[in-house]
Length: 298
Image (cartoon, rainbow, N blue to C red; front, side, top):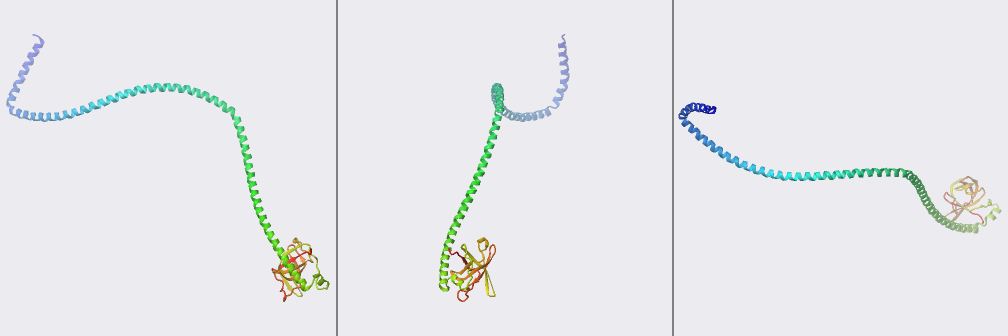
């Protein structure tokens, strides 16, 4: 007999020996197994429902995964296309790099040439800078001269204005002096008509003839001193104005004759004289502020 046949017979014997107790036990527990079987069917039905639900969810997930797979496939194709484009770009960049290296060498050569040119032109540039500095200094000096000339012009213009104003004031003063002289001459005429010529009075011993002035001056009484038989008056003109001892001056007030003054002492800017021919009753006494007229006979 074949070995396999022997094994088969042995297995059948073993199964028979094992099934007999099981059949006895099954017959005994049939009701219990039936109840368990019904429970198992209920559980199977519940599991089937859950399986159907999970199957639906699985189908939905499967559909989503299929869609995602399709999208990823599209992305993959796009990525492959981009990779191909990138490869082409890399090749172009390599070509550009090669051209750039060539251009770099050319630029280096040009820079070397330019450096040589700059070095050659440096002396010229320094010379131009020095010349420019010199021109700038000259321009600054010219500007300073222009400013000085402008200031001189303004000063001259101001001085001219002052001179014009002074000339106008002198003309007005000259006109006033002419008017005063005319008034004084009129006063002297009235004095001569009343008292006679001074030379005649001096000849009669009434007056000291004094010294004839050599210039015309106007002054003012600044101080009067009285005491004893003589009165003295001080005027604001002295040797710097040409006043000399012995001069005879006329004292007036508002165009009227008051007295005469004979200079007896002269200082630098002051002169003192004796008052003569005062008449308190007729003309009033000489006082500070009265005008003093010194005139030549020419």
